Image (tube, rainbow, N blue to C red; front, side, top):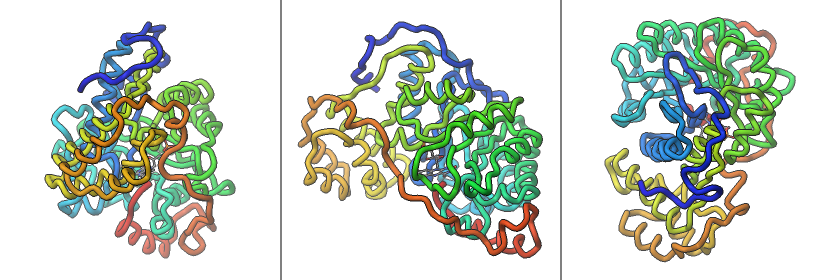
Length: 410
Ligand SMILES: Cc1cc2nc3c(=O)[nH]c(=O)nc-3n(C[C@H](O)[C@H](O)[C@H](O)COP(=O)(O)O)c2cc1C
């Protein structure tokens, strides 16, 4: 890839020294302590490739050694994986140069979670497994899955323990990603963090919101600090509202976390991984692309999606949701934006991108800040009497068995 326009000091920028030591996830050494958050419908092989290329560019700027960042797959339901559905088999594919190969599993049942982990491990399909306990989607929490699950301490422990045990057979580290809890009156992150640590996970990541908050308000970074002070023998990763490299540095300063997990901030902005690698290496170089450079990367992303889906039409349908994120803050009128949001072929994409002003500079503030999901807080849909006990009843065991049948997003 051609390097993009840089702001701040000219690349390579002066290095003041690494902000954090490399992140250790089991035997993996992640040079830049940054994790691409799993995002359903987003962090497929194509998007991970784009982010990885930018992370590598950042390594060149910052001079950090070792692996760049960790790029986690979108979540894959254990049950679909065990059943080897064509979609889940496609979602677990990695590029040859993905190292470590990271996969996020979603599960509500220890036996299925174990079977899925065993499949990944024994068939050598992953080098790292992340477990999703953060999904706030009503159709998931209504059955007791996702962010509702850690409330049932025994079930949480059994799932984590089963997957760790399978991973250990080939030294595959397992991590846990979770939210603060169900709502402010039903927090789970501290006990879940301690359980995960005791069960042998390699790191825990906390999104500083409850399920009730969904994506509204601001992430509570003090909770990340509390978790860091509580879980002391493994890395604690902070997640929520990192929109820029400066936010990432501030999160580390304010919480003491060992690394940051970045989701929405890199939507339409995969070069954030260059900024993050540079920032954590102690340099002030930042990527500030022109509109022409952004258009070029949007096209590259689409080409990678064509490779991923093996189908141009599907790739074009997928890229549509990224258009507004890529163009955020740039001078591009509603006509071109609307046309791009309906694009159906690479040829049409090229024609439309050619109408953009390639010399339009990075818009600064207008391109920064929040992007992607926001929404409002809500009452969390839960199975009847879910909150009455922290142990799983027989009745709830039956309810939760249905929780894996239809899930999406985290
Ligand atoms: C479109 C979308 C899909 C997501 N899918 C997942 C997922 O599959 N697994 C998961 O653990 N979290 C998922 N999340 C949550 C993110 O990983 C992350 O925790 C959340 O967005 C907060 O981080 P951020 O403020 O950096 O975006 C998703 C978020 C978004 C916006």
